[in-house]
Length: 232
Image (cartoon, rainbow, N blue to C red; front, top):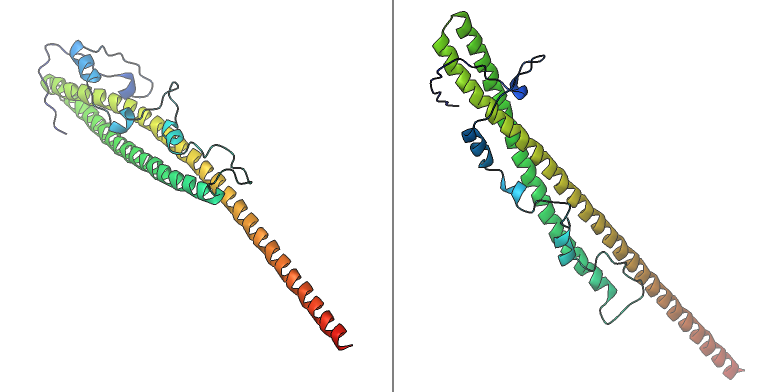
């Protein structure tokens, strides 16, 4: 990574709690320009679009698409629409919603991986700069120390921002995974109802076939009895 350090008028110790060696505590005061840069930092689209909040229903889109899925589907037919057709339509809607939630999880996971990789790179740069600073101190090269400390400060600030962004991304990923699990539960519920209805229809057909066979046997016996009586 390429850094350009401006000359410092006086030596200042530039470290923060997030980049200090274990056992040491330092403080850092942000300038107005740094604060403005922090405010205007871009964040991934997945953290701003469809962001979940306590005031919003996590599954508003779910309710719009599958308004009938949350209700218990009666085993007795209601209205002209077949029960199986209704369940299959709801299952198809849940399939589309599941694909959308699965895509959200995939995107959030990829963005988090990229962020973690960037953090690892920044940590490596920070450690390398700290070693160079120690070397310049031993050589009593004050100009080199000032220049390297300016770079070190920039890396530490960027690392701090990336770590905060990583926390937000991790939270967003957990929320997307929770939404996906809820859709899976609903899909399992609808599939169970479909299976129950299918078994009920099969049992009904079996009973109908049994009655038909019984009627045929009864009719056949009556016919044979009539023939025997006619011969006698």
